[in-house]
Length: 333
Image (cartoon, rainbow, N blue to C red; front, side, top):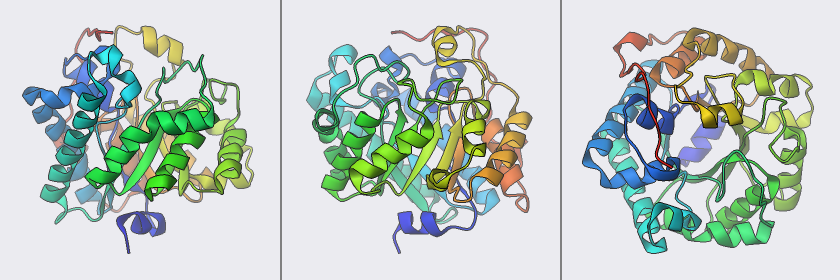
């Protein structure tokens, strides 16, 4: 049985990490253009910080006796981002390969203590993750993301996850590219405070459109980069589509995407409340497979979620790598 098959059949949700980029930039003080943490693969200090970061979450998974979905640092790795990052397309693909190699090293060190660890090749939007003013056609998106997805497949990831999708066309294109390379695909949408994608599509419409266009190819769907309050009502409304939601990576903050974009200080919310809200979400999601966090979350938040969802495990959140936010941080654009 493959790692992904084990994930899909698991009786308890696997853990994943939290707000990787906000942790690096706001809490650890690193800088990168366009919120592109992938360029930090060439920074030795950043790599050491990334290792501490993932070690903390894997410690948590070990304590919880559950599996782990280990993301690659490739969310902003589409070759279309190359000019904005002062890189060539070839350099972007080399960074993608480096990110997979880094994740493989982390898995090798932990696989005797946490099993299984699913190596997840992350693909993010080719444009702004919050404001899809220029929505690509599905086939154009397929070709746009093909170089990175091909690279992730050759590097040996277990599955592809399209994270922070703002529109269905791009989600369809990435899904078709994953099919082309023979890898399982997860699609994760982001929503605004009204529970709809930035394009105005509802979660129900988005899941239905991608399923219809791809023969229900995604192994499951997720919601990420939104606070539970922003999408809970949509889940409560019910319908067969809710059973397709297999993962949640929520924001710590109730702020809108526009407010988060303009923020100088990190809003890390209330970790205890964050965990409590996931107790409610699990009741609405019968096929929940993965839980973690997104913007503003760190080990504290995911630890509180794990304590709620894995109550028999002795999770010692205080013993994990948890860093207080810096008083002020700016990210170079």
